Amino acid sequence: MTTTVNHNTLFIDAAALRSILSYKTLNNHFKTTLPTASSAVESPIRHSHQTSPSSSLLLMPSFSVSSSLPYIGVKLVTYHPSNSSVNLPVIHANYTLFSSVTGQTLASIDGSEMTLYRTACVSGLASWYLSREESKVLVMVGAGAMAPHLIRAHLSARPSLKKVIIWNRTVEKAVALVEMMEGGFEGVSFESTGCLDEVVRVGDVVSCATNSEVALVMGKELKRGAHLDLVGSFKHSMKECDDEAMRRGRVFVDNEAALVESGELLGAFERGVICKDDIVGNLVELIRGDKVGRKDSSEITIFKSVGSALVDLLCAQLVYESCKNSPASSI
Image (tube, rainbow, N blue to C red; front, side, top):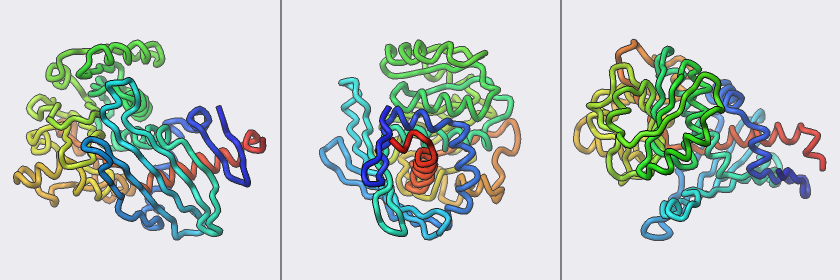
């Protein structure tokens, strides 16, 4: 674990970040700060550059105009989907936090680990508003780096979940994730499956984190009262569910960027399955109570996230301030 100081700059690696963050703490931080920060933070449109036919470089800047949140931040992200074939993470990232008062660099944070935490916690927080309180079965679609974080975040947000079923195109990866996760949660069982449609039918919460360009979750298979959490797609060619899922569900997004980046939404808009006015609301509106989340136990809810520089900045704030106030940061 490395938390070092160089000319007042903190360098926070993945191990140090894991010692600082918990899903419950980060969820609570988002819940209390997002409503006010959403109007105080400027987040220019995310830059996305194709660096090869299959890989991308993303730049996500944000800055606060509030004296209570005196930060500027930028995340640099590389996306290389072919890495999964050589047992490397698909996404690598670094986050740099600056003072908005002096402009000096305050921290350099492992952006890959930070992204895993903040993405999972956004999904967990949305599930708290949108999934049924008595949800029992979580279906995890995908077994990559994001999957264990999503499982933990959903279990933290919805303690009623007692079974986790993991599906992955490569069955061996699903089996390996089950072995890694089982025994870590009292009263929760883990299993893998090779038949996605079959387990979607029993999923109270279905969480997807893949780079799929073909629909995986079929809307006709979703049970009444299910909550569908879509994390993977961030460009038009990607999608994790079909149009029928979008037609059946009340759809919420993490932020407005999802309306122009999500392959599931863009495709459904283009084909007239739903329109932008059918999107019920975003995460901030759910937290504020401006929009009603789940209305009853039978409706299907959908949450589509594409990530935002705002939640990155708030996550970096929590990490930096926790680290700065820790005795270990004085080394």
